[in-house]
Every structure is written in structure tokens, then in C-alpha cells.
Length: 336
Image 1 (cartoon, rainbow, N blue to C red):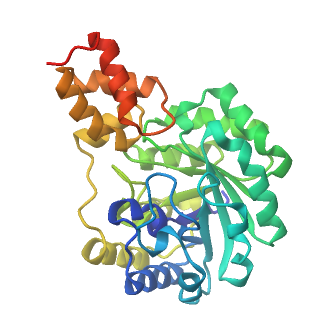
Image 2: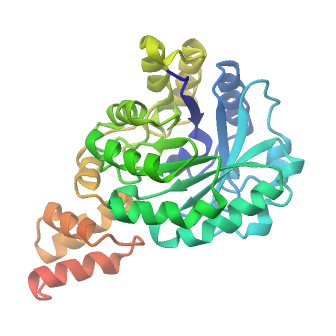
């Protein structure tokens, strides 16, 4: 079996835990140690801001300025990547990247705004950069909708097409079904970004690999929003333990990087408790859980049922008004 490509996104997705406030020492340590471990790609942050929450006052990996990129340690194995969200980052913001250590741009969009992605793929390719398209909230797509999203980018097909289980709602069967759709409609490698709300990130990654996924996202200590991602150290462990994957990553160094993050970077241990599980089982953004709990209590409603109905509505943004509308519909507008 071909070696899976392992991409670490601690400095980008992990910023949801610490507002992207990674110190220069942390950035150097994480990048250098992962490179020594022969991790294939290291995503060092966003270019132009995060789309998941306001990042105007966030730390350096939310913006990846030219000065930040120039200060990155030299790498001997890994390719460096940044993520661009077209809804918050103008296409011209990529123009200086060829003068930086970055070789890859990851372009992230939801199914409902993926039409804006081809322009970014085309621009990045013209700059000599490799590209991935990261389709977020893939649990909100059925096979026909996923095929339509793929068709939207086919004219400017990226080097890799990723699906992201943004809400941690997929099971291995759901992963396999979506990878099958991608294989039928794409001629490029397929990637998977798994969240762990149901405790299935590793199981989903393995199901994806068996179904045809060639690229895996992961982050040290699972550092990311909510229940977090597939942990880089766990991915390296099962790829090492399972001979058919023939990984070249160094598990010892990756575990060193994970210990560093646990002791010096992560503000709290990653957990899979009620809030994280509720977001996954109800298939909604983790940032909805706090307003669901608060507003449900005001209406005297079961937050699990409110969450289920919120997820079923497939909301496009995290807005208190969405939860208010669900609660009003359930009670006729009466609070307790």
C-alpha cells in the first residue's frame, strides 16, 4: 500500500484552543521537531484570518504575515502550507507566497460557497504553489450534493481534494460512502480531516485509508476546536504498528513534539465530554453548544433535542438566532 501522506495542522487548527497565540519558541519547536520526524506537510496557519471565528485580534498563526513566514525555521523534509478561506481572505493576499517558504495553499470552503474556490486554485497554481481544496462540513452533504461540490472545482482540479468532518459527526460507514463518491468523480488524491467528537477520529481515518484516502490531517495532542482532531502521535502510532502502511514518519520525535505541546502550549487537555459528544451526535458546529445550553434553559427545553433540531437545520453560520428560532418553534414562543 502506498505510504499515506501525513499533514500536521497543529499551528492552524490548534489555534482554536489558544486564539492562535503560539510563541516564536513554540513555532520553532513544533516545526523543527515535526520536520525531523519526517512529517510530510506542516500547516503553519491561516493566511488572511480564520473563517470559524473573528481572528482580527488573534495570534500570529491566524494571519501568517510575510514576517512570520520569513522567521520560520528551515525544513529539510516537510513541505510548509497555509490555509486560505476565500470568504475572509482576498485572492491577492497569496501573491507574496512564492517569496516565502510556503509551497502549498489549502483552500477551505463549505458546500454552499465552494463556487468561489476555483479562482483561488487557479491563482495559486499560477504562482507555482501546490493546492488542496478542503470541503468543510461534509456531513451536511448527501452523495448527490457531494458530487455537485466536486463538479464545482473540476475545471480547476487541485492537487488534493479533502473532505473535513467539521462537526465530528461521521462514522466509518459515512466516511467510506463519501470517499466512494470522490473516487467516482475525481482524478486527484483524496484527503480526510477527522474530528473526534464521537471518539471515531482514528477509526474514520482507517476506514478512509481502506476506501482510498491518501492524505490524513492530524494535530499534536488532537489540538483543535471542541473534541479536537485525529492526534498526530496516534496517527503515527497506528501507521507504524500496521506494516501495510509502511510509514516513514518517526514516532519517537512526533511523541516528543506532542509532549512539548501538552506541557507548554495546550491551555487544557483535549476532552470528549458531554458538550463535544452532543455537537457530534447532533451534527452541528461545536460553537453552537454554548448557546444551545443557554437558550434551551431559558425555554425549559431539553438541550439534546434542541441540538438535534439545530443540526437538522444545517445552519450555515453559528448564530444565536438559529437556536432561538428552534426553541420558539418547539414552545410557541413561551419561555419559562
